[in-house]
Image 1 (cartoon, rainbow, N blue to C red):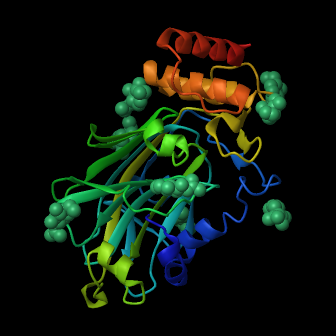
Image 2: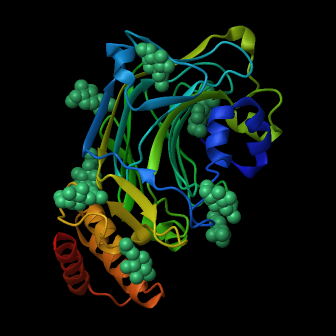
Length: 340
Ligand SMILES: *[C@@H]1O[C@H](CO)[C@@H](O)[C@H](O)[C@H]1NC(C)=O
Ligand SMILES: *[C@@H]1O[C@H](CO)[C@@H](O)[C@H](O)[C@H]1NC(C)=O
Ligand SMILES: *[C@@H]1O[C@H](CO)[C@@H](O)[C@H](O)[C@H]1NC(C)=O
Ligand SMILES: *[C@@H]1O[C@H](CO)[C@@H](O)[C@H](O)[C@H]1NC(C)=O
Ligand SMILES: *[C@@H]1O[C@H](CO)[C@@H](O)[C@H](O)[C@H]1NC(C)=O
Ligand SMILES: *[C@@H]1O[C@H](CO)[C@@H](O)[C@H](O)[C@H]1NC(C)=O
Ligand SMILES: *[C@@H]1O[C@H](CO)[C@@H](O)[C@H](O)[C@H]1NC(C)=O
Ligand SMILES: *[C@@H]1O[C@H](CO)[C@@H](O)[C@H](O)[C@H]1NC(C)=O
């Protein structure tokens, strides 16, 4: 979604839904300890086959405009200036695999977007520009940090406007991988996102929407990024989403931030339904570690969990000096704790 402080204000005028979500995350748990808990996706797997009609829209809510459900799936249509239909899940998930099969909208400056976003503004995105039928953009933000724009990377894809492709994100505590039709195109490791400070790591909702980045009222920077000014006489611009699948690596009844660090180790999974007998008393570190480890395997995950265990204990990030064997032992201990 490429929300930035630069264009947020202008954007707010035209995309009430997406923007309200941004600014009205009104309760940012890294700033306020009394935010209400996030409703969790209780099952490991959630799916919506939008080509089956509007009855498939269970667990989604529209935050702007309205969606048409037809044989091509959910239709997100911009007919005129100000339109920006957007839906989001009514639940959160905490590490997981998100898969969206869709066709992007055409139209200069039109942005078709798949956005995963948390209450403290961690964000993982796919953005497809209507003026470019040969590439798609991947992007991410940690804790709303928009100070730099070097995180976006574009990848080639065959006619995303006329061909339905599956855009996925495999999100764990150790890494984030973006995939197109099952082929990994980009992997971001925790340490590579400003030593974790900019790494998306808190419970997210999925948002799907379309907006006019090329609206003439937007900033020069936004219009230029979006590929130029939108000509509404070319409307309608339609994005079609055929289906969505979400695998939640930490199913439960709710999530909350234990403290204001926004670190994944501080997230408490209440009412875990998989891998643990514990529920509301589950310790954040163990819950998150085993949630993360469920979807992560190998040394990176081990090192990651070990680092968290160490930093959790000492309050200091200790990265070097942890051997893989020690790391794996620590992970096993964490998993054991989670299973007690
Ligand atoms: C913290 O969040 C609560 C609940 O949303 C709200 O009532 C309160 O005003 C917030 N406090 C601050 C300082 O933002
Ligand atoms: C889901 O479909 C119903 C019509 O069956 C509609 O009233 C509702 O607004 C739709 N919700 C979303 C999020 O599109
Ligand atoms: C989601 O899962 C269903 C059922 O397995 C499958 O038909 C559909 O293609 C999947 N969609 C995506 C985007 O992976
Ligand atoms: C589409 O985007 C790619 C990657 O940024 C760029 O190389 C290509 O020139 C763009 N094509 C058009 C038509 O803008
Ligand atoms: C935001 O990210 C930039 C680099 O992308 C970094 O220099 C800066 O320290 C970060 N700010 C915070 C508050 O983490
Ligand atoms: C905790 O587990 C017990 C036993 O399964 C169950 O009765 C209770 O409802 C659970 N509480 C929560 C908050 O999930
Ligand atoms: C919350 O964090 C505190 C301080 O780190 C810790 O002692 C406590 O066990 C945590 N609570 C839960 C439910 O994880
Ligand atoms: C997601 O990541 C986990 C951990 O690396 C891996 O086991 C799993 O196969 C990945 N799934 C996909 C679809 O890439």
